[in-house]
Length: 377
Image (tube, rainbow, N blue to C red; front, side):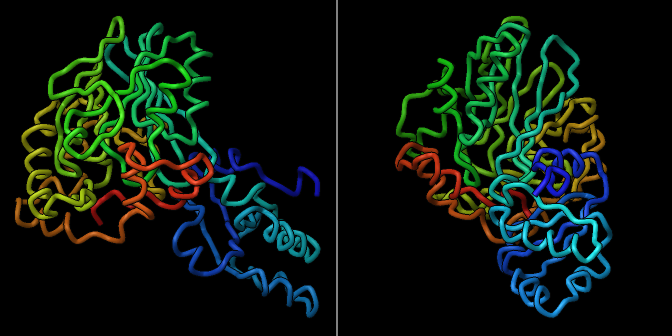
């Protein structure tokens, strides 16, 4: 297999983010494909199980299996082995096909970065995980920095990026106790000496490790700038956004095309939480200036970046484009509680993120594979 016969996951992710048309052939089982796959705003995907290609090697007709799928084709499987076999058969049949190196496992290890515009001295870097739509941030003033909503799988990446920029990483911050991915707050703190920071309400949820706790209005100083906490309950009781130089890091409260789901905190009544989220959106977040840049904690995989390569947009635009923001409380509660399946393994992930259970790196990585499912749909 030559390099010309493969595509690295990062290259594929950059093509998807750029809006290039990408044809994906997924040779995993149907249930795996339906649960989680390579997706994007201009991705066409087809699922054809590996055994169909095994049959085609004997009987011929491999090209017929992808009839209607535009070339070039990217073949995908779990680890890149079965898809390499399928891509090879397609090339022998005259089809322009390459294999995704490392398969979906490698896809889950891709992290892209983009700059979010600010109106002050702060620089905000958005980290994007295209396999799940998770977003995290590096905020800095050129000397001191903070990572917000880091993922444990990429703890080394945040530390290396801060070092490359000559930053003293002062804080590792979570906007809330996440249910869809294993938090990197403690791992980043251990690697860099940063203070782990969580909203004060995390203690009420059973936080079992030492951290700096912030409440509404508290500021995390970063030299010439600061992250200011804005309590934004609803998705969870402790959910807290952070403001910095015209940017609102809204975590899991307001997204670019929707709002958070309110049913992932076991002790909270979903309808009460949804009503609280409605108040948060209208009385807290939507009271910010229209030119505030909303930089959320997640994006839908079929979304396009709206601020250069970043998934961020002015609050004023979202007032008009997000239907949930125009709903009254009764309609909103019905919308927000009519959700899809929760994130995979969410109960275990919450326990790990509270420090009440442990998971080694391999287990943590496997727990969070798949879509984030944190939005109300």
